[in-house]
Structures are given as C-alpha cells and as structure tokens.
Length: 364
Ligand SMILES: NC(=O)c1ccc[n+]([C@@H]2O[C@H](COP(=O)([O-])OP(=O)(O)OC[C@H]3O[C@@H](n4cnc5c(N)ncnc54)[C@H](O)[C@@H]3O)[C@@H](O)[C@H]2O)c1
Ligand SMILES: [Zn+2]
Image (cartoon, rainbow, N blue to C red; front, side, top):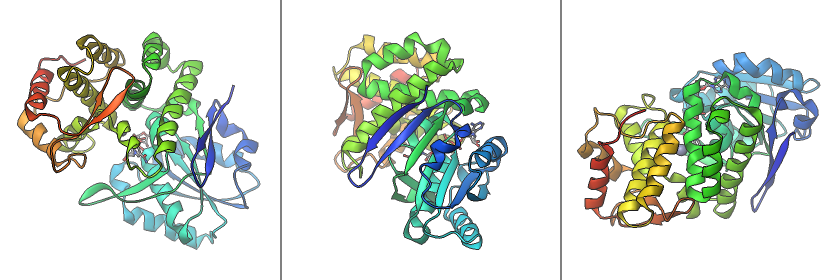
C-alpha cells in the first residue's frame, strides 16, 4: 500500500509518496508535471539501473536527460553549468519540470540546478539511496561543494513532490543501506524513543529489506524530518537537532578524507559520543547510552573512531566545525532517548573524557 505524507511549508506544501513500484505508476508522477517538458538528472550508476523505467512511466511527455558522474566530487558548480547547458540546448523553458533520480548527490545538484535555472523551475525528487529517502530529499536544501567547503553554494528550493520507491533499495550496496540506517536511528534518538524500540524489534526485517517494515520505517523517518523542517524552514534553530552525532561525525569524515568513511558511519560513531557526553552531564542514564550503542551495533554500524586518528586531532577538527560557537563547543545532546537538545557550552574536560572513553569501545 502506498503511503502519502504532506510536508507543510509556509509558501508551499508538497506530498511525499512512499511505496513499492512507484516508478511504474505513470499517473502518479504525471499529476505533478505541469507542462509537457521534463528534464531528468541522474548519474551513471542509477541511470543505468532505473532511467529506462522512469522514462517508460513518462511516456507522453517530452523527456530529456543529463547523467552526471558518480560521486561527491561531481557535486560542483561545473557540473551545474553542464546541466544548465544541456537544459538550454534542449530548449527547456521555465515550464520544465526537473526530476532528480538518484542519491543525495544527484538530489542536491539537480535541486540546485532547478532552483537557479531561469530563476527557478519545478523539481520532483526521486531519491534512490536510503539516506536520500529519509534525509536529503526532505526539507528543500540544495547545494554544491566549493573547493573550500562542502555545501557552500546552495539554495532552499522545495520540490513539488517526492516519490520514494522502496524497491530501488534492492540494488543499493549494503554498506550504503547501513549508512542510511544510521540517520534513521538518529531520528528515533532525537525525537521518538518508541521508534527506537520498534527499530530494535525489526533489525532482521530491515536489514533484509522486508518491504512492509522498510516502508513503515521510511514513513516514520520522513514524518520526523518533515515535522522538524516545517517548524524551522530556514534553519534558524530547531533544525540543528537533526545534527545529532554530526559534530563528532564530521570530524571523523574530514580527518579520514571524504569518502573513506561514509557519512552515516561517521554519524553512528558521533551518536555514541553524543550519548556518552549526555550521560556524563547527567542528561541520560548510562543504560540508555548503552542501549543506543547496542542498537547501532545490531545494525552493523561502527561505534568508535578509527585507530589512526588520535583524540587531539578529533578535538581540533570538532572545534573547526561550523557548529562550534565563539564561546565554546556547541553540541546536540540527549535529554533522555527521543529528546534531543542543544547544549551551548560543554566543558572541554568532559569532551576529552568522552573521546577517551570512545577508545575503549570495540568495533563491529
Ligand atoms: N540536502 C540535504 O538536506 C542533505 C542532507 C543529507 C545529505 N545531503 C547530501 O547527500 C549526499 C550523500 O548522499 P548519498 O549518501 O545518497 O550518496 P550518493 O548520492 O553518492 O549515493 C551513494 C552511492 O549509491 C549509488 N546509488 C544510489 N542509488 C542507488 C540504487 N538504488 N542502487 C544502486 N546504487 C545506488 C550512487 O550512485 C552512489 O555511488 C552528500 O552530498 C550530502 O551532502 C544533503
Ligand atoms: Zn547526516
């Protein structure tokens, strides 16, 4: 059964459709295409797998496409220029609908191209990684990277609709699936302890991509993410809670070199650290911190930083992270499982203790 979730934004509200074989339901997609022309942006990997299926569903429309290279390194202004060039050459107008078919990289870059092409055209997101389905396709943030920083060039541009076909997860490399599951666990940890228990009772089903369980999970995660972004459309406060585990996580990602650790893997370790720090501050019990850690382990995610990075390096990298304020280090912590909070000035000594404690953990 298909599910539908409405994302409420002040200037636009749009649906997220979640279910099986959505790519084979032409009418569903057609309802969100206002004129004849569609421009699909995908990448070489996802294009090979799903572009024909999507084009078959778009029969009757004038469809053009552009495939970008596969990988974060293609998330650049240069690629945006190439996409826009292809749109101009194929005669796309302001009435064209851009469809992003792919993971978060494709979603971010196609969303950005859609935001700036002739001052903005309609965009439909069809996310194909779990991370993109539960995270990047919801909320309207689009961006490309600059040499000096990730996601430094971007715009808010809400899609007209999001289609989440859970069947496409079947071809996703298992490691990418688990990385997406880290963001799912994050949703439970920050907003809904009951969801965490449900995830724990469904570990096997979810890792085996059992469709009902996966659909239910994607729906609940999209509900949590969209509820947060609807309350904070331009990221001035509440959205920061979605960064649970990201201050530590970014430090690991940056120091290891992007791509060595998947983002979700680094966030998993980051959440263990955030829970440890929360326990040190008396905000959650050690039992709850242990529960979160064991859940991550059950989903085969890492729970401690790599041995080749020392604590001094991690601490320094966390200080450079954009979520550090002038006064001290700012963290998203847990006031109990399912209840994230922002903590402005966390004592350095406790952070050091948490980093030290992280060394005692074992890897999966
Ligand atoms: N806009 C936001 O709010 C937001 C939020 C989180 C992350 N992001 C961005 O998302 C990006 C990461 O996204 P990602 O983790 O999806 O990575 P990705 O887009 O690089 O996809 C990961 C890999 O999976 C492949 N792939 C995608 N779908 C597949 C499928 N169904 N079958 C087989 N292979 C498939 C891709 O080709 C790629 O090799 C980063 O650039 C990050 O900045 C954006
Ligand atoms: Zn993340």
